[in-house]
Length: 323
Image 1 (tube, rainbow, N blue to C red):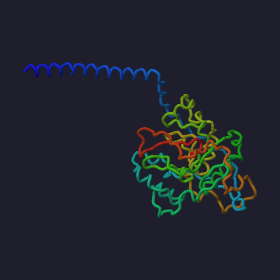
Image 2: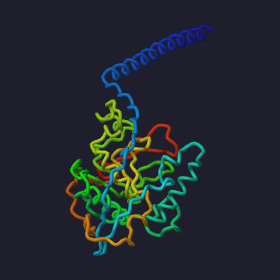
Image 3: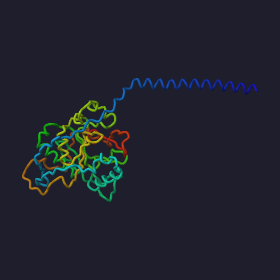
Image 4: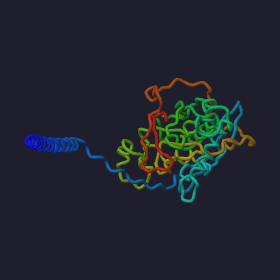
């Protein structure tokens, strides 16, 4: 009996010691957390989305522009982005988002190539890389789909035909990617070679998460989204005249990003008789030397942070100038 009492007493002592040690450990853990929290900078509040007024209240008159294709002067045709390809339309109330996304993927596969894991290879046997070429846009080398290269040349011709050419001089741009930098069901238009990013360090994406939201322009209270970018809205207006959609209109407010969502068969009006006019010059099929080697990462593109609560795994992604 005495042995049992002794064992019981030892057990009580051990339990008490264990309780004290556990309490001290918990106190120490919370103490370290508090100390660490005291040294970490407070997270900046997520910026409010900026108002998105039209790029042009009254559309300006742009003189007809043309480009040289196969030695002939061909008129550029103005046309808008196709609504079923605009990602914001996939998530509207009453829309079957999965069906809308599948339709957009099928169309992009047929027109621009099959990207593995998305769509059906029966719709196009070739990958987007097969249709890509490197051209110059406002003096910057960029690799895009061959048809979109024509649209870019039309944009450049229009910029050069208006005062917009002197309003902004970008130093970097990026086009096609060979890895999908979206997660979930979506696929980036960059893999098809139909998207272009212009100066990510100066044209913000304030609808993303940190660190992109911490850009000084995102922290500023503004009356227009155009106040959160270096690129003038005149450029946005001209891009939109030739089939491009500006992702600044999206909830991501990705102001650097344009994607060609027009009809590639409507880029040029080959039936029009064109006298020699403003031209962006012929495209080069050879890739010129890249004057911005630091902007081309050796590995897969870096991903932008995920936007919390977005449907279909929506994310906004960015490579340093080569998105």
